[in-house]
Amino acid sequence: MPASFCGGPVTEAELKKRLDDAEKSPKQFAAAVLGLPEKTLRHKSSPDKWCILQILGHLADMEILYAYRIRQMLADKGPVIARLIRTIGRRIWGIWNRHHRS
Image (cartoon, rainbow, N blue to C red; front, side):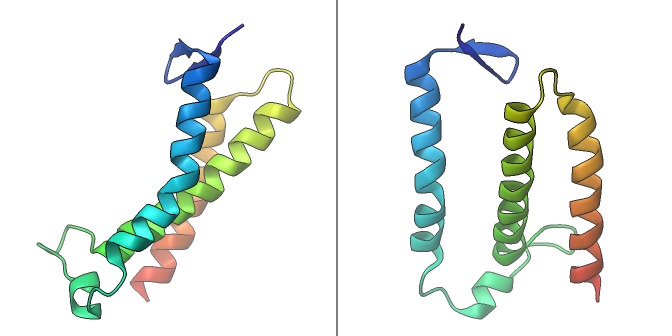
């Protein structure tokens, strides 16, 4: 049976490509920002927008969330993904928010 991703089935080849792309992402992000001045990394185009460092922090947090979700899906016979998103996502958002507002 093909895996399901974003509501639709994917083939084994598509899943492998997505996993390979995900594995490359940290190196690609690091290469993209390597050598940028701190002023650039912290620049916000407006007060309600995130700077590059905040975006990278968010991506790192989401990696933790998705690793947890994948382990949970593999361990459970009938995982409830929506509940995991709300529960874990709120915890991560709360931690991130407290850290970045102080």
